[in-house]
Length: 523
Image (cartoon, rainbow, N blue to C red):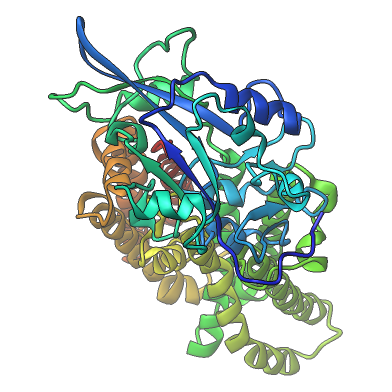
């Protein structure tokens, strides 16, 4: 529970002296006992790295845990404020507010957060906040037999930890993330702190690595000099799976169809029943499926309304819920106008006037429904591949491609519609071509961090290369060519084929994007 915090500003932190650590795991055991951490899950753990070749080998240890960042990305992204930062700098969590969305796992650059198998809510090292509030040290500090774990107020120059950090060379994990980590290491080997410096082999000292970490390591470079390899670590799961991949597609179809329908009204293009009924039906259905997938993906789906009832206004997961609700309202209004006009209740002239009023806000809403995920993924600071400034625009282009493709498929069943040739097919062909170019440029270009570069290499030349080039790029270009041919006058079945091919292409692209972004190890 949240507590009243000391009056004077404080910044609690850890200093871990790896020069004296013996890798005994007492800290891990004490933490698991203190917090009833399930078997196989950890709030603090000891990583082993071995370097060299027998008989000239060395073993180094690293005690890993939450870094209680000064600028904690997990606090920013959490949609319900289940994660929060106390005035003393401790990043704590309230599992009574957690909905199990797993966004915090994506935001943490340190692999420090897990989904508790018993409560299905996020958990991590919370500095033993209950002990701190009682004037006690964290459990791990008490049991360490070599006094390798130091704790205290880093802002108090007279504290033992402040003097230790000030008087010795120290390192932090992932300094390039600029999160202000408050766990400092003395004498730690770089291969222990850098998750890319020591890939996992086929086996650990006493066990086999989890299959995901083991298979991903095959795509990680090995230092030819140190030959460093990780021989003990935690599991490295992918928090988001096929539901998130599918959600990116469903909202692209719905938002893209409504985007083109609204643009058609503004441009004076005639989409007939496609714009009046089919596009808004796709919009409403796409948003509904998107919401359903998002709720289904929660570990505590019965709490999904907490996003709106206990909101964090800094989180794009909260704003995404707002955007989806606004889009659903506008798309439903557009559909209602079409239904009333088709039933003869609303004169066609009046229906056209209402659509003209709805067109601009619908364009904006459709663009945001398609693109807000760019801001959300941008807050997932642990996944460098997702930090592209182009992502917002890529998502909007993908929506035009997928939504337009869906309208092209529907056009086969409703008969000739002038606007399909003049607006939909050229938009689909152009959007598909632009999407393919953006994807290739994004993954083959230079990247700001080593993590992003490793993930991109997995896409273009590693575990995802076949799906990326054959599905994500190849099918997209094929769909663009088919849409262009249909635009030029090829039979209607050509437009149908273009629309179907582009749905498969987008699903292939999103599958690669979601998985590769999560494959680079963070610990």
